[in-house]
Image (cartoon, rainbow, N blue to C red; front, side, top):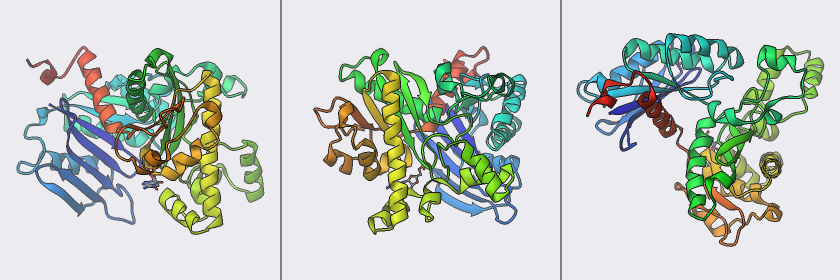
Length: 415
Ligand code: AMP
């Protein structure tokens, strides 16, 4: 029995086929440049049986991309599934669930219509997610489809942390509030962190954790007693930490000031804060942390500044969230930068000794690729490096939903 996990972005479609029992990835791939006029589509796919293949193919939309992926998965000779009903369910990453979807949800026509309504809040992200869902419903009729929302884990955040101090009517009329994103990643690493803390005698109900998802997009979540109580992304993924190309926190009046100075429409301001800011904007060099670290080490002043601004912001949030939770038991680092950059982890933890954070320098420098505690033995706060796995979390949530649903997959019911 296998779960197909799908993540459809604006011009890409990522998938993994995961064995429901062993959680082994039996096939995975990425279709890129979907519907991009100037470039031919590309697919890179990998199965245990056939190894890795890469080829170019025209894909005008997500329907056509899903046709190609489906043909690869079910190829009679080299495909990872021999019969389509080996796929027990499809789990779809859906970016925005609004206030309506606070749990992974079995997709029905009514659910689709509701997700469509929520798309107003994420006009760039939700439509491709929906296109992926529709393509799978067409190709795999009868196979349960489950939406796993990036916002859902943050549904427990209290109103004092999710209300913006704007006229209240904008919340009730337009849904303007903090939602938060990267929920599946925060939830996945928090689960492992809770187990690691429990082994050290800290009960999950009493634990206070800050999870730092530091990838191309970056966010932090305060998790008290295993439940999210605050998170750094907001109505959109632009708020909070400094990211590859997103600004993170700004004085909101800057946007008005820039619009006047540049005589620019809202779409220009949107592009500036989402595509031209962050590490790229400050350094003028790159949005990639490896380039930033490399240039900074060679004396590039603005790369060094970008690195410092990036790490300082993380540190500030750790302090804020420790205050919000009334203490701190662990800081978790995950995603591309969090898992791979000792420099960022060290700088983010710098000056946090007053909270009881003591990083073990040797472990920080050498550990990679596994869940491990990189704090000193005497540190009052554990510092945990935990590789994230959003696809595995989506597969788990998908299995949970179909097991709980009234109409589970026949394969799950088989003896
Ligand atoms: P993700 O979005 O999780 O794939 O993370 C992408 C980010 O991780 C990019 O900014 C990469 O530069 C960064 N990254 C990957 N490997 C390293 C590394 N060894 N050192 C520093 N940053 C890294």
